[in-house]
Length: 507
Image (cartoon, rainbow, N blue to C red; front, side, top):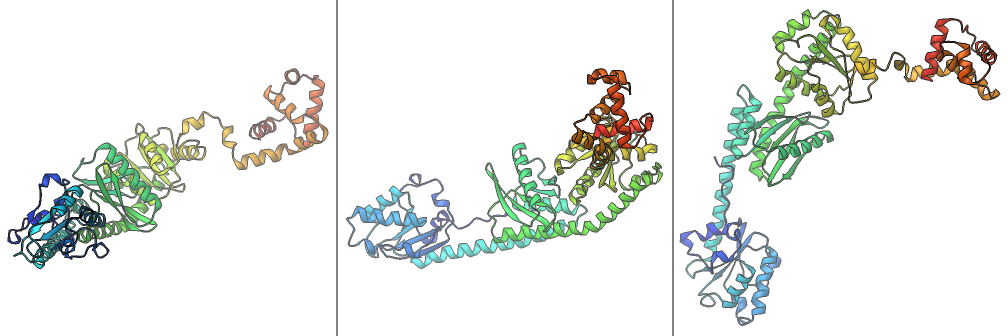
């Protein structure tokens, strides 16, 4: 059924043969859409200035009594027509043979100048007949819209019962409105659309950006967006603070019946998504349990479950990624990618947030994930499942040392072991260890800290340290002896030297 039965227009009113209405002048002199604007109502009056009592989209009928005393006044006719146009009147009907024969020439000229459609209402056609004809057309259009709305909602309800209820519902919605419709998930990704590929790349990108902004706000909302020549209506799904996605339809300015159809789709789609939430929680718990099983370096259980549930586990060697992102939207995004990959991707919750397992060559997924959620991801070196725990530890280390959205463990490893001490805890311990030397240097104007650093950097060789510092070797010995005394340590011990070297690097 047509989603938009024609509204009554001036053209359709003039086309009613029983009314015998006749357009004055040539239609080509009017604006192209002048006769095709919807007529909201038909009203009759002979007031010289009826505009205070009129509304937009109205056709006015008059017998011309107001022109009797000013029939030869061009200014009066022009002013009368200008006021009607300013008020939004879309047509003027003149009832002839009541007050005078024919339409006053000055009124015809004024309407032509203002490009206001003017038509003759013959004596045998009562004004009430014209108004009734338009009212009947409005009622018929309203009835047709209500009938369409009920039929559309029925068709959509039946579509929701099909195996892929969400996809079928969306396709039926697009069919009923004869336009494009799309369903975005909680991450802002377009998961379903009908017809597929109907949007050009620029429109799709701009629509995706707006949907992402709506989801970030996290509040239930309906909005319209104009992109090029198309208008889109957006409606969030779910509940405030826990949005499940966005329904988009390439239609704007929906009337009550159209909104009713869209609301029916929203209700059924939202219900389907909420019903899936319990199942999603169960899957999340199972995934988390499989991650714990993999951390024992025995993939047997995970492979058995994954084979039946998701088509298997990624082939080894794999990389393990860890992110501290815990949002439902991130998990849903990964769930969709798992369904697409079919055995080429696995994820589950761990103590950090989410652990992701992928084949060694598929690291581009992590950059896409980080960009979609503003997340930070640490990625391990390739490893077999028998070394899963070690790979997970590498990913966790990379995450904690991350300086970019995606940090590979090999990048962190290249910074050396001591770089791992560069934490708040490491810096606090280092500062406390060398604090006695700093305090002495500040009070006495000495250089014990610099001397100790240079001495250790020169492999604990006094002569080399003295040359670099520009002092006598006995001065270096004296300073080192004083440092030993202040720190209460034996600098001949390798363990002591190593700890002091680490402390100086971090501090």
